[in-house]
Image (cartoon, rainbow, N blue to C red; front, top):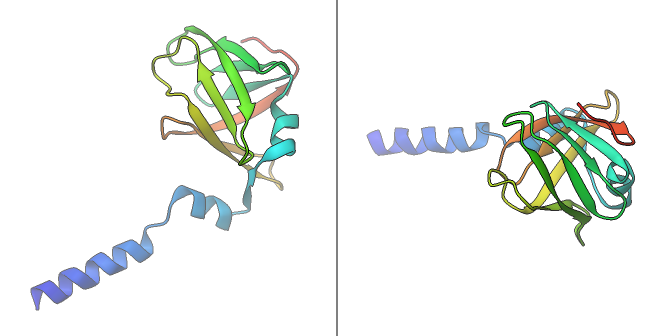
Length: 132
């Protein structure tokens, strides 16, 4: 009897627990990919909810300041074959290199960024190079 109740509780939890991606999808977000993502990023500045500012140059480099540590960081970026942004940091030991997933809500223009460290950040993009 106890095993049956435990099994039912585990099944219920698995069904009730949704990923952040599922919740975003259900609330009007969609993944930004490919050329649409490249257009949003290239030549523009990303400002995260942590206070970081990173300018993504059209030549595939990026640079800016971490809002958490205040450190100046640089690296390279590209859009991979799956249409996601991939970054390699030259001098940031806290964020592993890899590809991120970015979602936008077309109605509100809110952007959510799933970074390579597994953390979610609210993000805005500013036209051109912006410093903090």
